Image 1 (cartoon, rainbow over the protein chains, first blue to last red):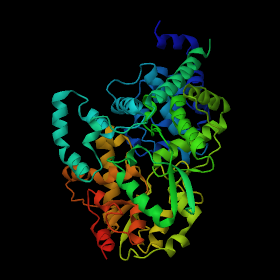
Image 2: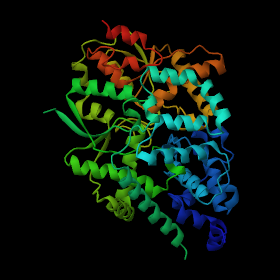
Image 3: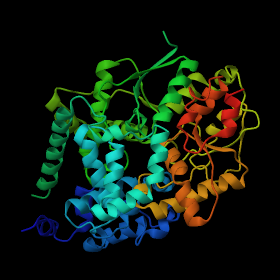
Image 4: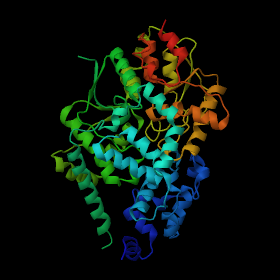
Length: 207
Length: 299
């Protein structure tokens, strides 16, 4: 049985309970009063297939598949407009991050969603040495669809890169090692442990 | 001894050769002038900003900040943590608050930290450099040190998102924060009170993953600065600065505009106003030269 089917079984299709238990700040979802201020406040609002208040209602209506496979949550820019304007003070930004993370964990996030892809690349980049390697991060973005399109993209953005190097705000040295914490191994051990604790908690719920 | 001393969290973009290294250089100059000493948290790590959530669950992300807080407690027990990067400040402060609200999450983070023999008590105050300027030093004090007023410089104060929401600066509104404008006026410049894009999102990390959608917003941020007669956009946030400055060529190509609007940091404005030269004020780090500010710095 896959993780996904197992989870569906466990919650007997009560998706709201599943979200409350497993999604960051998910216990706030039921507090939404459907005013729509979040939708009107979102800088990328017009690009959401389902704005936050709709996502909240869909969760309550048990539309598990539609919610978790949606690319809506991945439109969040983390501007926090919705949080400060929500009359009921729902931590909407965090719930969107939480839903996105949960969907990805279950393998349900839409394939080739650019922000889903980028957020993972950012995390992996940062975890390698404990600090972001901006040059490698930029290159992985250009080369995400392979070598040929990578070279094309790099040429397209060549001027930007040259500008950054001239201003000493990008360093070719970052390709060879670059910045990092001294004890990257320790940091990785810490984060691995945190992941284990979190995974164990998610797996144990409802058992 | 310096008048003000803090445990400092610079963040990835502020490192040498990184995109916000010009922020760091001007912050160093500014702090010299204001008698502020920043003690870097030894071996600090990335906070995973606001985009790490795809790869990291909430506990791993919060634990990244817990490690920084632990190191600060260990090395600078009596100093508050100060950050200059909006995302660093937000992530660390958010973690601090969540741990306070949720002792079980804090216990879990400590369990993870124990893997490397670390522990944190979460008793640190997490502050932004702007709070240091306004609350610990104050406008009057800042104004009294101005040697070269930014006369005639029209500044669009672009506060952006994460320096402003969800925490913001005490006593300021989320919708129309005035502190950047007040700071500009304190330095003898001309703040533009009608700059309506002051808290508009630039796309943040989505400038990388959703460039078309983000550049549409950035276009508006720059257009409004021109419409309001600005010589320069000023911001406290390193990602806002980069996003609004470096894509202007691409935006011009797409929208048929001729944007050439410099985007600087508050710390550069202060450095120049305090009489420091263009280099100390990191004006050589501009991709779009801030000519009018350079002229004042060369006086």
